[in-house]
Image (tube, rainbow, N blue to C red; front, side, top):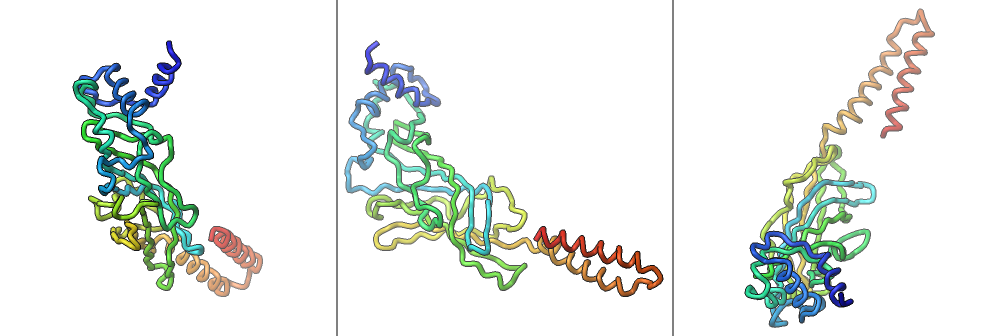
Length: 284
């Protein structure tokens, strides 16, 4: 078998087919060859027939959990998944039903196709495009509809106001942008106006009160900002901090009410309270 054929088969090994509805292996191989391997498609080229057209990118932010909210450093760390969709006209241009059969969906390695450069703009750790080259993109070749589900672990800054502790609320912002593109080239057109909490795991210390989406254009750059309002679970601190301290303070006062006939028992009681208080201080 020729070396070129082996290389083509190796490339196809990274292509996963779902619901081909009549397309056989040969037709799929032909589509991948004429589109990705030897075709005119290039992931570095803007995926529009008319290069001045705007690409509309839809994004849904699925929040999984709050990893950490650090009040001292003023940072919020979240774990979630983004659903990013757009239309790639160049992929759709390469599809021909008579040649490729009725391919409904394929998964293509992200390094082989154009991707929007969705970036967490207000990251306090590192500003970089979400996802990596191992991600798969779900593609409908008949329409060019693309669907990408990159996982994210993001860390953003927050202005902490603890003046009402332990009944305080904190507002943190998570801002996304399409890095390197103007709003006349790539822009967010979001179908959801808030963070999706369907698969969110509740945090023992903080509850999410509201999530609000704001869209804005600054210096011809498009930004999508989610404002997440966190409400402290006051019962958590009352049960783990306030109530134990009150009880220990009361027990300290009781020492002076104990009979003076047995100083040894008084001393044991006092030291027992001191040990419990030391353990509580370590936990805090």
